[in-house]
Amino acid sequence: MKTFHSDISNKEFPISERVSAKTIRHSIMNLILKDSPQFSHESYLSLSELNFYRNKYVSDYLVKEIGELSELEKTVLNSVTGNTTLSDKLDSEMEKVLTIGQRIADKVATFGGSWTFIISFGVFIFIWITVNVFWLINKGFDPYPFILLNLILSCLAALQAPVIMMSQNRQEEKDRERSKKDYMINLKSELEIRTLHEKIDHFIMDQQQELIELQKVQIEMMNDILKHVERVNGG
Image 1 (spheres, rainbow, N blue to C red):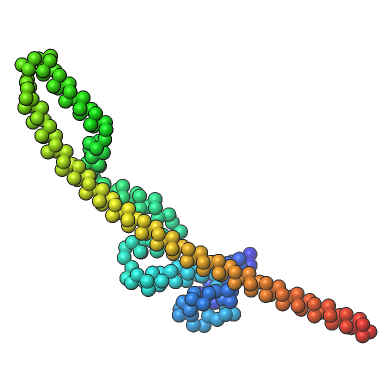
Image 2: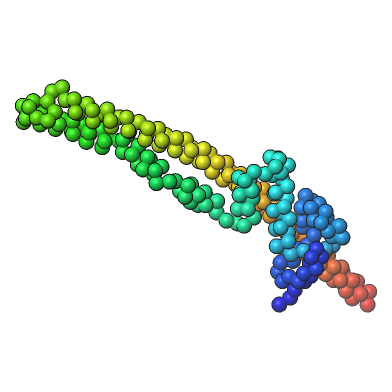
């Protein structure tokens, strides 16, 4: 397998990873020259080294636009650098932070705000009143005006209200986490688009360089043919 030595690290890489400095964008080239002043337009480096400087360029862009990177920006940058999925990781992190009490509060609030709860509780109250008024003829354990039923309803409301408030607080936390998630995903999309532009520009410049070399070869061939024709005609 053919190899070459990088002019940056002097390490050996496969020839398929060789990248000419002539095809590197000016912004990336400036970063390379800061670390390797001896690097020139006639030099070569590997694709992995070029990707390293691309990621460094993205990181410098973030620092320039945002300032000091927070944990959110660092997480996004690591995701871009490592080519990992960000949304699945954020979903799993949001699920891990839930305690048992928070899960119960969410389920109670979900059930308490549903038609199932309203209908079932209405049926319960109807049965309670019917049993005490018609079956026990107001001589049962809770005759009219249903003091025990009112006590049960008051206790239920007193317990249900703080549980629902706990769930509402959890919903606010979810909204904040969802906003952070949207911000991180949008930021990652922007960075990946910028990186994609870099790669497309590099590809176009590389194709242009190959076309120029091809044209040079064709011109040399045409000059050889013209010289041969001139010799034949002169002879």
